[in-house]
Amino acid sequence: MSAQELADKADRRTFCVCYFGGDPTPQMPHALATSRLLAERGVRICWETNGTMQPKLLERAVKLSLETGGCIKFDLKAYDEKRQRDECLRQHHSRRGKRYPDTCCVQVVAE
Image (cartoon, rainbow, N blue to C red; front, side, top):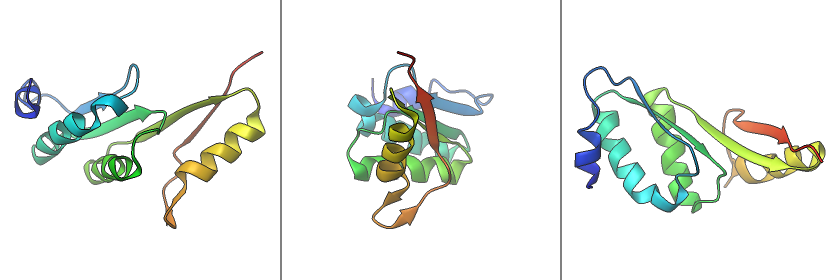
């Protein structure tokens, strides 16, 4: 299915499209192409990801979310809360000196 065909599945009542339920990383080029088409129609774009995609693709996803009023959630998991917070801050809050809004999700997995 092409990006256009997928975008056409959204109708005039579609307010938001959220990529979640697994991770969109393997399909990022297709998801971004579809999202650009939806954004042109005023659809809000949201993501839930572990953030492992190529940094340039991640920046494009963040940009689309910010431009459309959507959000991006980094769903990272660790066994230690301090390690979780440190890793999140290291990888997602300061890419090439850019500061993003507080998008860090802390979820500590019980032993």
